[in-house]
Length: 387
Image (cartoon, rainbow, N blue to C red; front, side, top):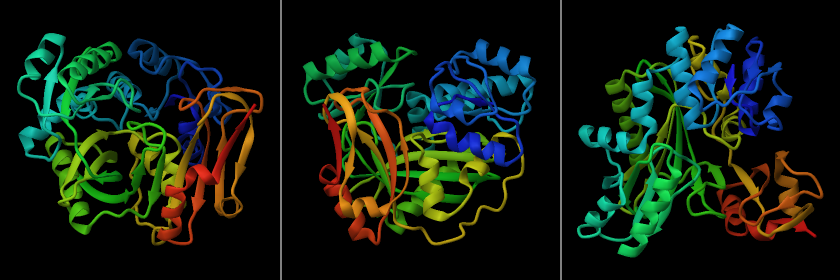
């Protein structure tokens, strides 16, 4: 069972079927695109422990895989523990990784490089912090992803407003207040075996529509060998200290101007927006199948890439204007370079500026220079037509 059924879970659903599993999708959104690909659909809120446990128990599932969402990962771990299913860490371990305040405290104890941070659970604490912090700061709910509830504060007044926003957004009613780190953004997706990094993929990440949600990710990365070595060491330190089971460990980090990587996010589930397809297109490997095998408690094959990384970009097309969707127009050069695409809206649907996700495209570049040209001129190459 996949604990979700959005477009992001399509690679996991297909991979599960390729491995011979009868694959059930869940989640509570009937129109989610992933349901079109699964063998069976049973709607249930993947953030509700009781609902998902009842569903998995009634269906007598042999394995559960989280969707590309932190709540799903935590609930899947709970279901696995209750039903004695393989391939998952304990709920306590998942909370340590997926709740930002707990991970920051854990990292501090291990000496891992993360932003200087302050836990803040009440506006009164924000008022105390305002006397000692240096601006700018970034304020985040501890339990949400995708930029939800995140904002930057450059003054005492903005700090109060940001904490209020994050507290109101967080289900746990907890936030972290962090130093604002400058540098280039990257994703690091790995397969852990015996607490060692057995495979990794690293990208460059870009924020074209929102300063807090990745819109574009590309291989190959610009990171130095020093940075990659430090991130691998950090992953293995985390895996050893938490005794992580074999499977995916994904994180995001910022490479600072002095070459020091700073970890900002971490999770034990697949990243969203078809990131798994970016890995597959870049390295010609069945990454989604490895993730399924890990969550099913099966032996993950020796994960060696078949080729050197190709220069591939995954780009989420977000509406840059409001109106009724009338179509997409790509520049001639870009149109020839698109190797895969998924569309999420039909003509006539209402788009909301900077919110509506129109689709996702995958682009094969001739070289890094070609990739960088796309990154810097994407608005000229992808035109969303509205009426």
